[in-house]
Image (cartoon, rainbow, N blue to C red; front, side, top):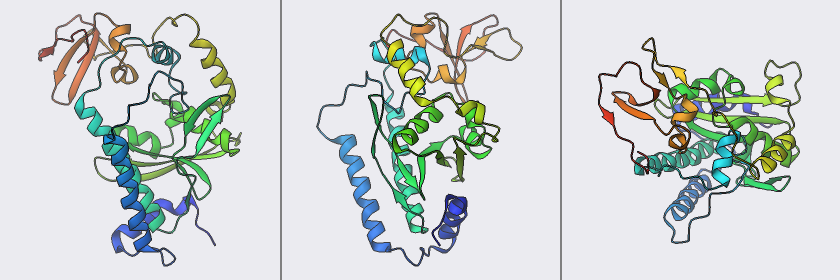
Length: 293
């Protein structure tokens, strides 16, 4: 009997304890495949081919907010990506390859890696299917990991992961979707699975909109005027009267476009972006220049 995603995490943990692969797995072949995948990743990262223009709609970003996508497609000035962020991105890709290696080593089936998908003319590449479930592989902070662990991602999806995977599933004619996620701080794993047709599931109301409607809406929107309002409303910074950016905005490269008077203060746990300052924080302020921080 073939394995299912229901036992995936348990099987990977057992593999890590015993270091014994599933009896049906060709260990040497999987090690070679993993090595070739990492080499391909490094060639993509450091190859000499000109980088692709990112001012396009892709299935990987179709779940982002309307105003964010308008800015992407229309070439709005944005902050430069910091070198350490590129390191974080590459680290995430390496984690993805490692998790797929462990999935295969534990006897589970990985198919459709980087399969080209299309929804109403918008294209993208899915991560894979695991045991027949359309799957995205994610590395997350401990905070972000909780949404995969407790199943609440559909209610708090700042980066559009749900619409992204719905698009891949639609292209493949599938209805079961999942995320194999790792807490990159401590190595904890989880597999979150949604059935897009399960009307009894509490998350169904968040999942039921056809992804084709979303794609058609965005295709029309980016041809018009810039949407008004913010992607995520500012939130109170404690009881100080100050207002800070929501998480979804604090990570956005367009935040200075939306908040021209934005101020950044550095705390031990990282930067805090304030759009309204009533009480001056007693920490160092970093000046945001025209190119962003």
